[in-house]
Image (cartoon, rainbow, N blue to C red; front, side, top):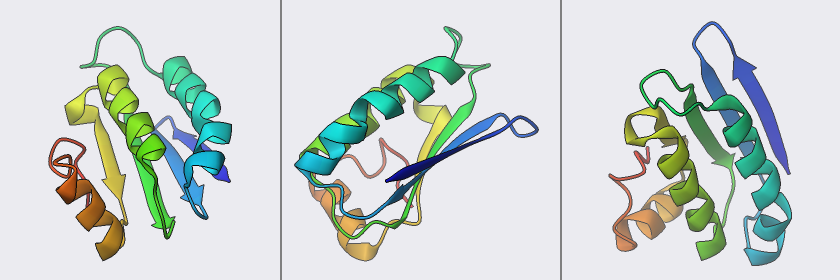
Length: 106
C-alpha cells in the first residue's frame, strides 16, 4: 500500500509505503508511483518538487523497489530525492547495492 501527499508550501511529494515491497507488491504499485512523480515533476529539476519516499512501515524491499527509486531520481534529480526512515536492514540493502548515497537514504 502507498499513500501520497503533495505539500504545496514546501513543494514536496511524499510517498509513504506500507508493508512488504516484494516483487509482487512492487509491480502493482510501480506504475502508480511513476505516474504521480511524472505528474508533479517538470522538465527543470531545479524547480521540480522534492520527492520523498518514507519507508518507516516497510520491513522488506526487493530489487524491483530499488528500480522504482532509481527511476524517481532520474525524474526528480538527485538533489530533489530522498528515502527517509529506513530500517537498519533496509539501509544495509541500499549500501550493499552501492546506492545509499546516490538515493540519499536515511
